[in-house]
Image 1 (cartoon, rainbow, N blue to C red):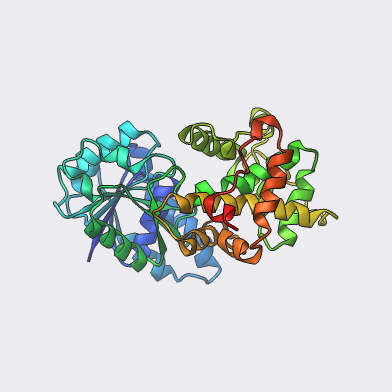
Image 2 (cartoon, rainbow, N blue to C red):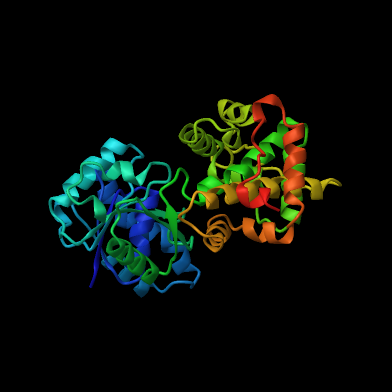
Length: 371
């Protein structure tokens, strides 16, 4: 039985442990906090109790899943792992220290993985004895449910390590998409315009209800404000600020005042009881719904085309990642294919009308500039 180690037993780490255990892997799990270790199995069982009660999962299957997870005191007890995944705090010094501790006990051919969503994988590899076995495995929340995992190779990652990580994670039922070690990887990078253009429209006088209604009428399960209400405006702000800093403040990653004000007001979404829209019901699509959708999708397509121009991914990978990671009805390159010949003009119009602080935001990627 192949052993997978998971370090960090918060919501994400416990979800990752559950994912591999449900697929029959032996999982060694730990956390630096004793309370998190002591409560992990009870939290796992409590989270699945409703499925058992509804007849969607047999009690015996839950018992078998839980039996595959062994809580251990720390990384020193994880020497049997073929793959060790960290899901700890997003601080690079903490992650480096953890990987150094794991290197002291795991086999030379075992793979080290980070679940980071915002830090550079290559920076974590610095100082390791075997940096070529470090890679990123970025799961999405909730990990047992979301099909997508972004597999991130830094320039020195050995192909054998990537093969091991992909094989084991696909065996756990996930769709694994290879990503470049660039800020935001694929999903968090390409999702910025989905939120950003909605915020630009909000600041220009459109209502959040109209914007979301337009996007939902176009097939999106949630509009940008509904999605921010779901994940938390504070989480969206942190992700945007992180990407903006990593991309040297480029206007494509502008941090909009409307988002800052929302966080400052404490209206973070579902977790605080009030967000941009929550708990109000959905609205009817406005008369200018098509223009709203075209603007947001043009920015989405342009961002994806810029990422493609930097190398390390493909149009199919980007489309699959956004459809699985964000439940989009279509990927940005499907949008490009459907609107070939018009996107460059649409971006030019947006650039001409952009306020000074957004100038350069709509400059077309090479792929679109050639249309």
